Image 1 (cartoon, helix red, strand yellow):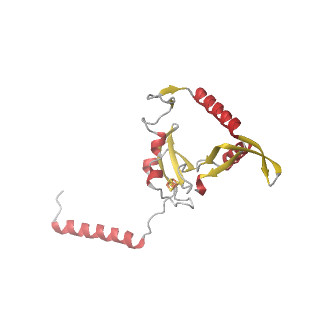
Image 2 (cartoon, rainbow, N blue to C red):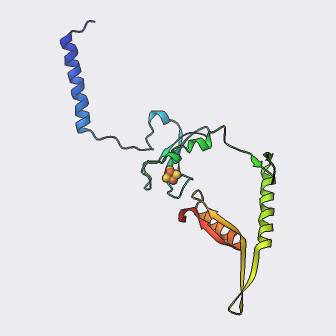
Image 3 (cartoon, protein in one colour):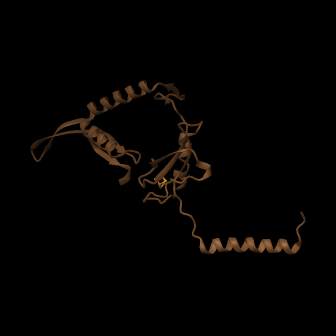
Length: 191
Ligand code: SF4
């Protein structure tokens, strides 16, 4: 079917007018993670908090068959209203990254090469070194102005919590630190 120049211009003007009406009268649709767009349709949606820094931006993670396929800022989160910094925006790469180290790498003192070790080996070594450090640096009593006080202080160790820890984990870390006599106990959010 042929189309005349007049019919074409008339149709174009009507289309432009309709688009203008939407732009003038319509409000931009608000982002809502409960109404997924086509690109994330059918994916499982989970909310979480960015593990990188103490700002604690809210995120939405989309997964398919247990695999992370998309991460973005949560528009309903009061801290970031959906925005993320460049570091948070790259969080996807933590879950999907062939270059990420997944096994323990150990370089012995004075050695120039890395060796692969098991997690059991690493945990045992960390525990052993912590015990040694505590025993070698533990101060049971301290004398102040001629009076002796029990201090049970470990001056050879410090501990720091990070934004990725939740309340319960921070509580446990605090308990553990004090049981070890650690006085130098800090959190990333304060420094
Ligand atoms: S997205 Fe950026 S600013 Fe927000 S918590 Fe993560 S690292 Fe911090």
